Image (cartoon, rainbow, N blue to C red; front, side, top):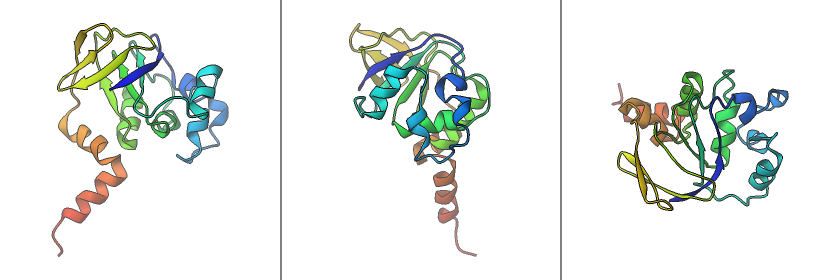
Length: 165
């Protein structure tokens, strides 16, 4: 369970999530400081650790549209935020999976900042309003990568599981 800390509209671009002027910063340990940088109040709350890990960013359709910069997913992951969106842009989706960012596709989500959300099997429960919203599950292979913490840990695990030759 976590609180909705940011409610966004549709077509939230990777430039909103991670502004292009910071593209020289690529290390996952450094990208989080620029997460939603131009939303200055929210960025300040993130960087001063006023937002708990496991909190939710909720968005409408086409979250993560725009460029293919993986720093956008890395910045969100660095703060251990969950993303619940009505739909997620294809390239952002793949970057997020590769980096192990928790994504929840929920086409009918209704939530406001401050609402408490809970993830349950196949649904998001808004504990504040009492409403439940069905989610669209990721394919098992993609979910396995997220569950492993990203593509590198997933691949490492798979290689270690193979019998010695």
